Length: 417
Picture 1 (cartoon, rainbow, N blue to C red):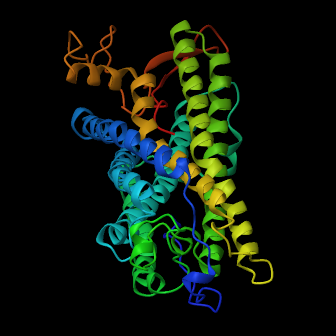
Picture 2 (tube, rainbow, N blue to C red; picture 1 turned 180 degrees about the horizontal axis):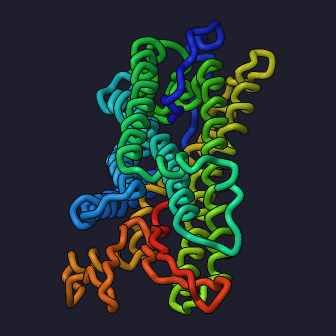
């Protein structure tokens, strides 16, 4: 489906071509079977996983931090995204047979797709703030062999505000309001105007209900490609994504570098192990982020260029049994499915990378013999944030004399993306 988080174009002469002059999209085995199967699997894993992670965030972690606030909202966004997956499975499986005005098509078009896009971009913004919050926390509460460059370039108040729970709540509320307000008017415009014109196409001679009744089908050129104005807005969205992506990547690279320097200056073997685990988790987080979200946005820029070329009447060849961009649309939809995969990957990462989250899950499943202790062997409180490994270890550094400076590394770093 076309990204309805961006505006669709006003009706043009090109989009007013009747259905008979535009070849229909011909879904292959990938659209009819592979995508529905993948979305069904994402529903079966993402819904319970995200519900469980949200329960741990809200009920099992009594102490809130800014990162905890961000990840609670990320878990809620992931849960909403998981709820759209069975409808998307039905769309790709039956969409070529649904009429565009049928209730199921209208539900997917005006309900499921906006919710999907809202939560994809909410997660992008929240992940950006998670990265900045973690960076601020680590920079302020660890001492490497030399201070970070960012501590000299940016004021201390900036890092302090990033770590405040009240500020995190305000940021999350602002993100939800901003994204929803941006998408809802576009959805209304699309439902009132765009669904009544142009390019739906028949069912490609496949004998579906759409062809039998002479109506436009749901899985169509108009729904999957949009128009010139929507493609321009998609370019803006792509630019915003890459700005956020580079910010997240830069923040985590700075954090990884800072941890690496802290490891070199840490004298306690236990601290070396904990810092090493945090460093490993950062690498895993960045890999998942790159694999799940980057390919879709790279290809979407290519897709916009290809569709713009096809939209030129001088270069468009739409007559024939199938639309020439049918395969390109399927690639786009596969990469969109990969983006949605991130919402199911988050709970798996919590379980594999975070011992506290792992213990709570095992306890819930009655596979853990004892309740997770909130006390360490030394008697210090070591509650872990479910978003990652929480370090609370006395780390000593060499000062001018024997081990004279100590501090506590208390930072979470094993969470979702």
